[in-house]
Length: 118
Length: 350
Image (cartoon, rainbow over all chains, first blue to last red; front, side, top):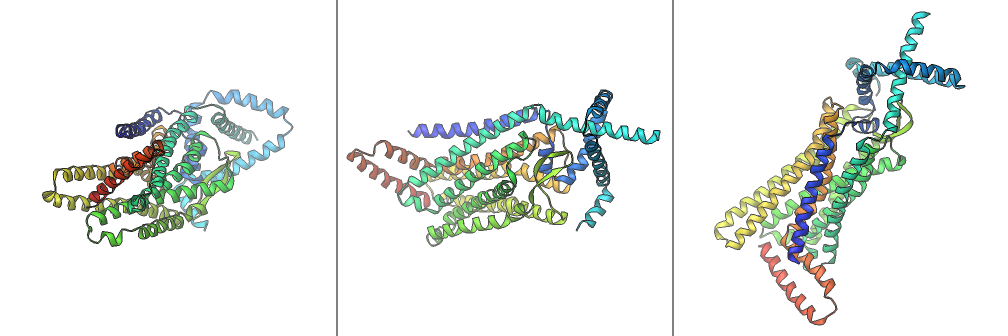
């Protein structure tokens, strides 16, 4: 019985360390990584806005061939859709938000904006 | 007119690509969607088994030992670690496997509030146990007056009250929100209106939740070891072995606490005062910090309970009683064991 308990303890320790080691190894192989959910959870909305602008640039550089095809598809969809007005409104809202985002990315304006908030 | 049209086209392209990114994130099954919950699940079950076993064994003991201050703190530690695993692991795993928060506004506040509470209770209990051992070993003459059930229970109440109070800002600022890049999704994020207040709170948690506890634990155990070292000359070989075991346990405890919580606090300070990068390496580092923090709740029952010879004897006794309870002659044997048990306990106290 004494040996059994000892064995249980040892196996618990081994399992714990193996699990953590496994976690490290597998985590190191992650490719997809951060999502809007996990990044915002850690950094908060303001910081993630500035980060997203960086990732957007990277995305643009990586997808130069895609825009042409998507442009055609989007055009076709827009002609067919009856929600053209809704789409335009969303797009205009996005433009405003992007302006705010552009301001946030600059350190001086970020500081001034934070001062104005409270 | 032509210039305006050109600009609008560029903007359209950018917007479309970002929308695609969102879709890709939602549609494709990345490995982290499966792997992260599995890893967290393993730690979860290990912790549940270990802490539950501790609670069962201590609850079953009906001798004087169940009243000892050490067992009260061990029990409280298991309750805190169990709460931490139950309220932290399942929900935080979804941060990495789901695109949004799906549990509603109440759980958004309560889960993160209780994550902070149980984390602080766990850490404060480790400190209390270090102080308890210091009093037992170094202040052995005054020990009977100080180390009693009443004082231990008072300590436990103070620990929980302090933890509830210090965690209040989390409940205030952890709110359900949305984001322009995912208009139909809701997120459970921490949003502070004043950056200075956030900085102050994060540093406070670092100090009272890591640096100060680490200092206190290290000092208490250092004095314990120093005191035992002095006594080495008067001790027999058995006592010397006991001293070595104590030293090993002490080092393991401090090392486990130091290692398990360091990455978590490094990331917290990095986010707060630096520019935390979002890349593959930082993602791995973040996952590791979670695994280690959870791992501490798994390791605690092993370090404090199962490595203790007395606890193993108690464990053996509890399960032995279950098997051989009915025959009357065995009861006498059990009584004899309990007598030996109490003698061993008193020896350890000295």
